Amino acid sequence: MSTALDVHTRELAEQGYTLLEGISTDEEAAAAVGVFGDLIPQYDGSLRYQVKAAPGFEERRYSKSVNTILVHTEAPGWNPPPTYLALHCRVQATCGSGHTELADMRRFVASLPDRDRAALYERNVEWVGHNTGGVGTEGVHRPVVDVTDSGQEILRFSYNLLTTGQYDPPVDATVDPEQLPLGSFGIHLAEQAEAFFREHRVSVLIPENHVLVWDNQRMVHARSAYTDKRRHLTRYWIAAQR
Image 1: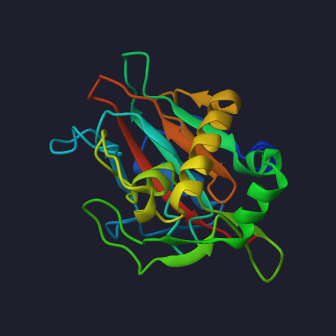
Image 2: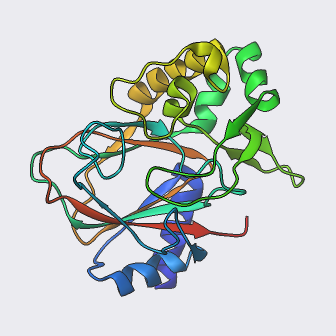
């Protein structure tokens, strides 16, 4: 067990994600991801969140729709955001899509021109603390790259927030740039991030009875659209000491 844990811990540190195998129940999943830190309540106050298509979200970019979800980190309005995210696949889509996609945000920041990169450390964003249909925090006013007193960098990102002012906007939402958190620069930044993501992403179709765990303070993630509404994953938030 310790050897397997060492492998997963090393993969999280080196590549930002790892895949746990042979996990069939909620209890097994909670125990498996609990070795990385403490499970913490999510938007609805629960330790488990069911990622499954539901009526009422057909026209939104939201976890309970079947639509594409664009690049973001989870809960950027939390202080701090969850250290790790975990998705336990209960029923995978059979339509050949519904992939979880990941990319290293640190590499994206390093790839930017000096002026754009500096702005990510200096310009604050109003990261609201709630989500569609859920509860939340009061939010935080922090830059995209938030450097803690200990020197750790926490990355927050949301393509949707920077381009529409919402985390879960209608699919066809358009907003006056002057009303956006970083104005036209935020749109410019989001488009650069999306282009980097499409080139460098890792795309994972999580097998059933597997759990994908990734570093939410480092990695951005997205999801491809799908059609098989049986798809069902359970999400966990994990807080860990760095």
